[in-house]
Length: 312
Image 1 (cartoon, rainbow, N blue to C red):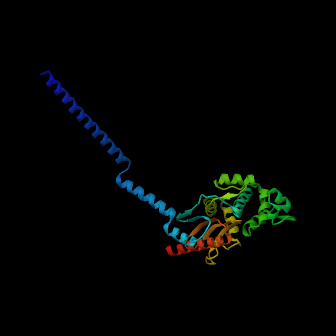
Image 2 (cartoon, helix red, strand yellow; image 1 turned 90 degrees about the horizontal axis):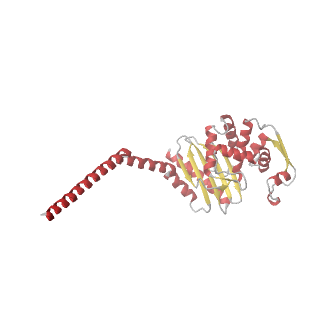
């Protein structure tokens, strides 16, 4: 009798424990379901995925990617490309954070730094700058075999130095202005404006994203201020080196841009004021055939413009 009583109690304990465990699991599952439902429903999850997909598609822009890929087909070298429609924010980017030697694109940053100093009454655009070419070569560590000028005085106003640095990419105008503005001041300007991937030291470097940000600030009138942003845009619209972004675009299309080239590096970057949509286009390249790279840049620009015309 005692043995059967023991078995009965043992069975009761097992059944009771099982019921308790089942109840606990039920409560836990119920809590988890409620929490999950409060955090995100199946519909909300689907919507989140769709939004993410749209962002990715908007960023990559499949149609634009195809047009650019076709323009680059068969090319060698490395390209960074950044495109942005300024009214809609539609964007395409490729290697946008990859650093390249900036070549003459540093003159964009030099120009903006000079205008900042003018705004702060630390620089007069009518100030006459003078320096011997030999001194500029020494100051900026330019080897004799690389120097375009080896002797003679370089002399021009701040205003002229800015314009020549941009419009014809005059190297000694830029060196003369850099000597007055100071590299340390340019570095501070870059830091304050958030161009964190650009450097004006040796070697000067930049990214497609930083240059695109520069142009977007210009377009929005927030680089220094509206007045000086407009003045910088006006200078850039007078660019005389037009063998890349403007090459295959209609003559009536206005473009504010700056080229850069140094050894294997070939760049062009600016704002295209299209009848249908103003847009930023930055193309940086490094290759063993810079002449061909310049043509590729022109072809990419043509492809972008044609794609926008077809998709409007």
